[in-house]
Length: 302
Image 1: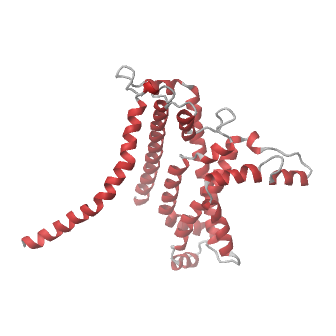
Image 2: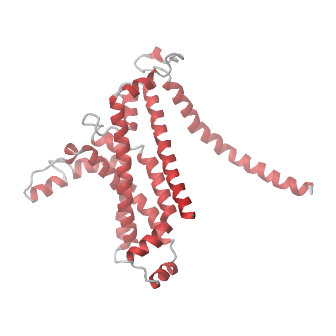
Image 3: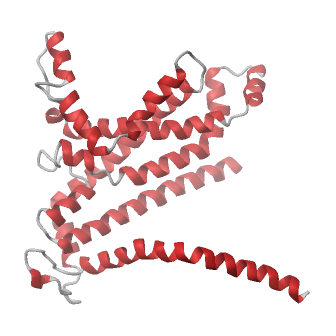
């Protein structure tokens, strides 16, 4: 009996030993930088002033946070981040669902269409931003200018007229394939006999989508949107290449504001404080999303 109980204990200890290096690596690569960020946010460290790296003191340790909250630009940057993330998530879900439903049907050239639709997601953010800025939207040499001249219309620089909408469109173009792939995997896991049974019961296309397809895709939708929210909150490359946060701060989000504070103004302390605000925002969005998902599941269980 003692040998029987000791064997699972040894197996459990062996598993913990095997997972220990990965756990240590994860702690070193994530939690140590996070702790340093918290510490730097309580300093007035500026790289142009080497002697400013010291702790502010308990009476002034929240000075960076007070200055950020008192700055009206911060609230504009926060609003830009929320609008950008929310708009991209909605657009990518709508178009991703449409493309997934399209590719789930057999038609000639489906493999080629699937490859072409996946291609935007395989591009680096900076590369896709360069393509959009210079090859597609440039008012002198871009494709949009050529189409405008062909139709006898004046060329319009969309990035200048609607900078935030341009960023939203470009980021949505790149992230739509991500949502499409996850939803397509969900559609292909839907049993054919369930669909046939619903059709025999008289379900039309809309009824089939609402009462069969959507309930089956719920978990896939949750995974796709949760991962996308986390990644889109960190959008940087497209903003850096296309608008540089401008005009003014119309397209500046929290990651780009952190970049400006750290590598333009060289203020590491304030950049760290902005980084903590970005972490808090990401966690709040994820918690809110999970609460909505949990509530929907509880209502479904009733």
